[in-house]
Amino acid sequence: MKTINNIPCELKTTLKIDTLEVSIIGDWVLEAETPDLAILLAQLGEGSKITRLVFSTMALGRWDSLLMTELINLIDYGAKQGIQVDTATLPSGIQGLLSLVYAVPERVGARRQEVKTHWLEDIGKSGLSIIGDAKALVAFVGEIALSVVSLARGKARFRWIDLWMNIQDCGPSALPIITLISLLVGLILAFVGAVQLSLFGAQIYIADMVGLGMTREMGGLMAAIIMSGRTGAAYAAQLGTMQVNSEIDALKTMGFEPMEFLVLPRLLALILIMPLLCLYADLMGVIGGALVTITFFDVSLVEYFSRTANAVHIPDFGIGIAKCAVFGVLIAVAGCMRGMQCGRSASAVGNAATSAVVTGIVFIVIADSLMTVMCNRLGV
Image (cartoon, rainbow, N blue to C red; front, side):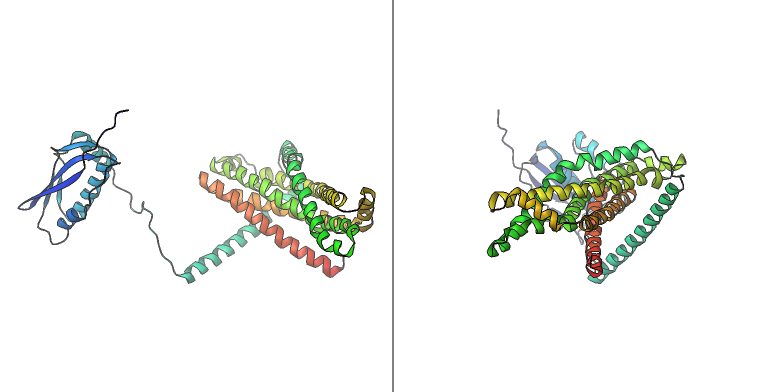
């Protein structure tokens, strides 16, 4: 391949009474070293007697967008100073591109400007944003409640096939990731407990700790967090895309209530599936704990499951299942609400999915904390 040696680009100026002639010399290409325009702009600055600017391109070589950018900056600066810029001597290609640039004036406010705000203003805006989100949440929950009432009265309109598809999506399709995470959580709980219990020769009680920890707390919590990142984000992206494509507006035009037709099947699917996923996560966690206890400690398989059966009772399962059902409602509300609030752009869909995950996890952690305190106070 032949290497092209660029002729250094430079600008030379000649002042003739009130006219400044700018000679453009060399190859003005992107890989060239651009000359500093500060001296030239200083000649055109305030207090200058120059009223007209012309160009000479007799020594101009190759050029690309670099020359166009510098010329536009120079022309714009001259216009601000009230200087007449004559582009008639420029090559016809450059004149054509300049005519395209200035054919439509730049829209006012099109350029992004960094606006510095006071920290008190930032706090105020954050507070107003929180209040707005709280109002939107209350309104959304109210609309869901009305949809549930319509369902109880047999007047809710949605396709049952949508309900079964959502059950398939958030149920059997989620089993692989639930299996992996629950096994690892049970394994970690067993190792953490074994560190202390082995000091007293009480390795057999690892089964009690893993069983109670998974059934009452960790099984449902980890399943909910996984579903928030998997299904909650999917709901937000689906509804957000429908918002972008005006499909939700089309449903309203045809007389369908979006809350009943779109949100209700997703809500029912999570309410029905989350308790089952909780039970499955509990089982996988207990198996994970068994793998550690049997492999690394002197405990047999029969002893492990016997201790688990003695330690874990029906109320323990009931607490975990009840929590997981509540988590399912919160995940559906967070995902569907962010999807329905989505803007009309591709970036808005991504923001809605991200916000759905964050909102869902925050709801889950807060709800789990409150329910755990309630169970403790009630002695359950």
